[in-house]
Length: 345
Image (cartoon, rainbow, N blue to C red; front, top):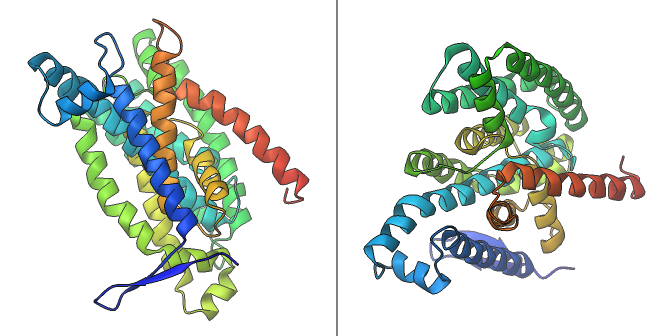
């Protein structure tokens, strides 16, 4: 049996803490912050980690203050929040569907956000702000359509996954159609956005993303116990007093909105939502959704991928979506082989 400790607050609130999961979460958080500091110091104006920390504390030169606070820090903070949002959204979908492949990348929500953004770019010639709005609307509409089509006396895991895969295929066709309708300038802009990139991200992307994460991530964590009950099946959850459909609707709505806002901020960065929850679960060796560990794992994965994209190829920088796509594809193949050997697919 695993050692799980219960902590009681003076107000009578009891919180169960898995020491291994807490330790893994702290180590992942430390790793994400360390890589973030290194990433802030990387670029044409290199800085040591000590100089970066000193600048953040207000002891840097004017040039360092400008480079860190106005140019590089917003990009890194957006990367941390996007990674965390995608990972929490992926963990919620995987728990709700009870399927390790039940992530926004597979279920079509990322494609829905992409269709919304491309519609704004190609048909309405919208600016960056309008494109972000289109991505959010596209993701939310896709989530609503998948939920309605998957409903049959409740929403069950495999039906949700199958409906999502079908919707994703249809939306992929819509993406290709919109690209063919675009002129050269709009098509180039659309392809760059579809790759997923953190280039040029500033405080205007950070603050809305922070506001959404500050509301939805704690809300998702608060539903941790009902979500664990849902993983046992609807009948067991009903027997334990869980309002199954209400809980599922709230969590799916949170997951869709987190995914849509993250996609609006950085484009469709693939495979973070799929891989981060599974990696967190394997490291913590803990059952359940592992939302907190997934969040810090997603943040760490994305800043590491961005550091690789900007530093590992010399003067040629790659969009972070290229790196996550390559690494995530390898991980997906490994996951499929593992699940097949275990007889689950």
